Image (cartoon, rainbow, N blue to C red; front, top):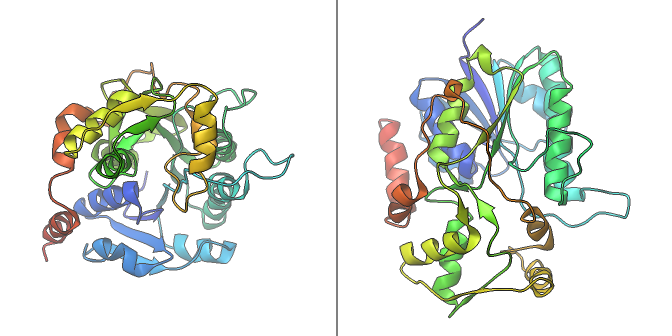
Length: 325
């Protein structure tokens, strides 16, 4: 098997992507990162083996141009919020575009270019049984995206299903910490929903580790941390670590849906009805972590307290140091 040397990372300028790209660059691999706004990826531009290309992925020609000369593709694209579609649309426009149409387009681009290796990040809660419909448009769209990849027998694919991902720049714990800085109390939908958070560095390391590992081809892996927490516990820890712990008020069934409906009208909604539907099943895994991934997941309680120390400038300096600049 030819060793991978150049990798296209779609979604590489985002939260998870930044860590994946950084780890790939640290191993001396060349990385191509497409982005709609090059300035927003300036933290990656300083890495010497990374090519940041400003483009939009709206056409087959764009994907073909990006994948040319690459040995592998990593797809990290995901969105948490999307508007409902019509009565016959199980996904809605945003979820369909990001989670269904894009994976299908990536598979076809790989096939046209003769690139066999594809690593795809999906979501915990997606069922292995295609006959089982997920409780939310988010999970249903993720399942449909997986299906496109599984059906591509000519690709060497690996699928990851992470639980909620935490890290210094995440949009989960930081959101709840921010809410507690601004509000006297936190009204919380589904406070007993369970999660098994994984540190972004562990997720990124697992993704990078499997690139040249044939034993992972054609397999799907749950990626979770070592501990299970309720949503109430996670919100409480975020408030404490952020320095503004507030009372948490669990919302009763029915009221939580009404509140989520109001919240989803915000420009950046902290909660939507579809998020609520996703939390109707626990975001945990009973699957033992495979040694093929080469990681020992870190505990949120170990990493969490340091997450809110420092800021973006400190992390930008760390990336520059890694780039030897």
